[in-house]
Image (cartoon, helix red, strand yellow):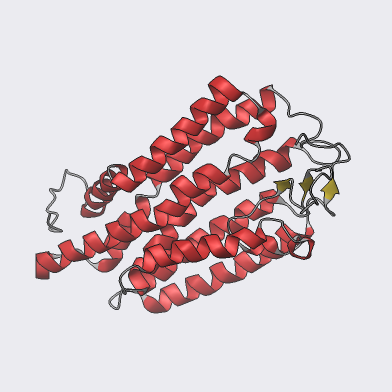
Length: 297
């Protein structure tokens, strides 16, 4: 593989050629294909056999893991593969910034898969309203539910690989992507709504639940679903801004890039993401909603 990309005046640009190449590389990555198979298997099970829309409300954890979390490792490997090819190409290599942009375009692959999962699952939730013990119920709307599902699946499918791109650019030690994935899981687990003290601010983390049986109960006690406070719609904005920050930070690694311009861009994006985070926490559902109906064991 070479990073020399000659083009003609009438042909595609070098950036386009490289982006298409990285999209193809991502789509044929064995680890991505494993995640794809698991995601499609869940979708088929839910639509054909289960058809349980209440259980589907908690399904976003699957594409978040199989597409988003595994995407950290997939993208980190693709980035290092691109760097090795550039080193082999020597003076004719495409700049690091151009290669970073091309790798960022490869995120369209996991996002497309997440959409393939999301759209039919959202249709199932709408066409077969969840049981009364689940949400939406009371003050919880379909906009709340579907927005949270979108953020937890489709946006996570973009965020994971982009995090992998940042890790590959800035952390050069072997196993950095795998270690980061493990740390993501460890931190995510206690922020899934287990503890009421985290319910207002847990949205600072990109992979969290918004509803479900989120509290600990003693054995034999009834289980009630809880919808957490905040705005899932603003959470989507916040997460997308974090994705943009990730791309800018990855580009900033290039010593020959436009670092002064990128510094200003990163500052603006971080400020905007903080505003979106505050709006996520303090708009939307004002307080946690405890469904009074008991969920089945």
